[in-house]
Length: 293
Image: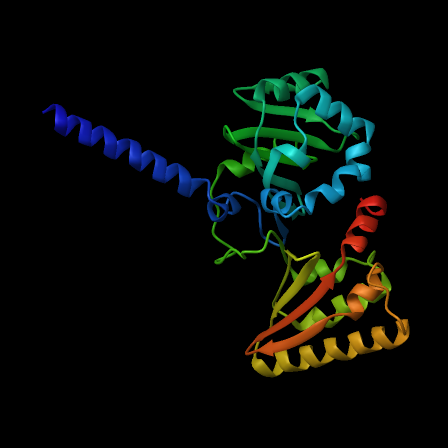
């Protein structure tokens, strides 16, 4: 009898552990984010940290902002060291985050209270740097936070529900972004060289950008899905022509400059997919971290 009871308890524990591991997998966590028409971004901070890439951004403008430094001092949380993965949805209603890392929840609740916010049953709300930026967050698990920045002070509640899967296969790259064509077309703040490439992607159905460390560099890849092979072939040729023009215009492309990075692109076609690749130097990442971030 005791052996049977022990076996049942073991099975229950194993089942709970399996459920928790599946419910907190990247695929499961992605289904909590609002995704209709949204730009979805995934960043594996743990992988970037192990590759020595994340340290480049340790001195960026974000980490040196007084507000951010005050947040680190009061909560003990610093994304450079404590964040392992971030899943982000840039949605029309706000920006939503699923964050996996090491959190001191009591310190976070105390920080919310110090900023004039309040917490109830582990759900916290506070006002950001401007009144229309309402921040809300709560723990999905001890090591997983759901956080939202939105005009809606309770926007994080949306991430309690599981939604239909928009992404059927998670890319293995440490950094990737699935971008709707409409969002690409609306981004008029891109540099001219990047804007020309983006406009060429107008006919694609979906666009995926991803990045992975590669020796001393980072490789950025593109996967654009078209309606048929003929459309894919036409898009690949157009991207090659644009890149050749950028290369000719630069004469001697500088790999530390965005134009130089884009001029180094290579493209191929595989059925309905257009595949692109750009090598990015560490110098370019350092200039990006020091200037753009």
